[in-house]
Length: 220
Image 1: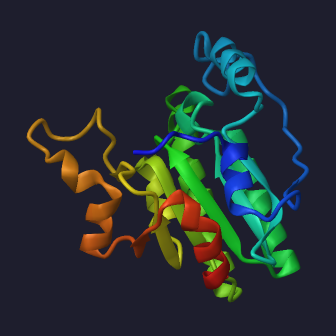
Image 2 (image 1 turned 135 degrees about the vertical axis):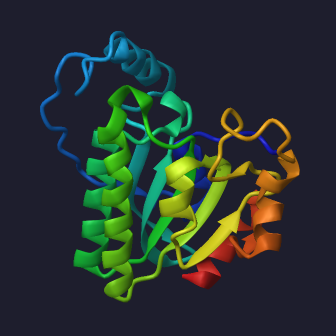
């Protein structure tokens, strides 16, 4: 697997120069240590923010890809494993709504381990929110072209990745619903790769990083 890029580095890789603009987002009220009062959750978020420079695990905005404007959703794996919490869901929902309002395709750039354990069942409900947004966007006749990075597992793969109209994957990326910590002991690691997902028909192509912008541009 090639070097793991940050959310913004990956956005720079696939968008035309200086065309990405982040969408505004309004973070709602926040209880100490989150909705469950998980001890140490606020401290974990603060460390993640300091390490990555991001306030949440996803960066959403618009940009040109080979001249075509799209809404792009890029995950920051360094922020708590790119996990989906309630505020992640807020940002994703807003991005999809913006895409429908402005008739733009959506490009999820997925690098996530799935739901955020510190938010419990509330984190799992974010997957339902995201799946609904994807379905509404499809019903509106707008394309969704996903790029699955390393890793793309759990509900993030199942909704934003596998649920897209076209699924492109980075070479050697870990891709599959079950993450490495929850697979059967005798599971074949090769079955959870981008190449295996293409062979099984769950993804459409493996694309090297240097070819991604041009490939996305053709699809868009």
